[in-house]
Length: 125
Image 1 (cartoon, rainbow, N blue to C red):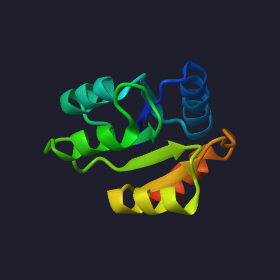
Image 2 (image 1 turned 90 degrees about the vertical axis):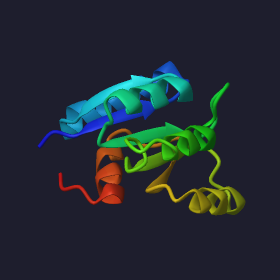
Image 3 (image 1 turned 60 degrees about the vertical axis):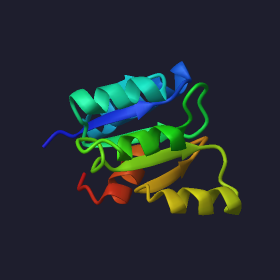
Image 4 (image 1 turned 180 degrees about the vertical axis):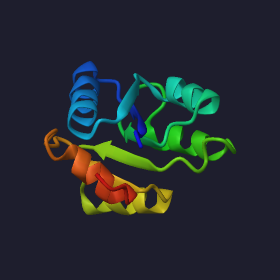
């Protein structure tokens, strides 16, 4: 079964590296959004199987985007994995409080990213 993943990041290069890795190595369908508002709209119209969400974005950051997704009945059950360069213990505790599926540190290795995502979500590859 092919999975649909939404990648939300304000950096074009990061979106493309993640998209390529997940499509080529895992065979998943990847959609992209450049910001939180776009991601929320996409999830409300056609919820993906999971979301990879950048923490630091202009306008609407990752935690704010996650909060908005939690307010929507169709989007609430979508597992979210945060992508962040901020992985200090204080930030990690903040992410734990959000009840996201997991956190992946930037920079990441695009060759192992599909396995990391599958592991966090309990998906078989």
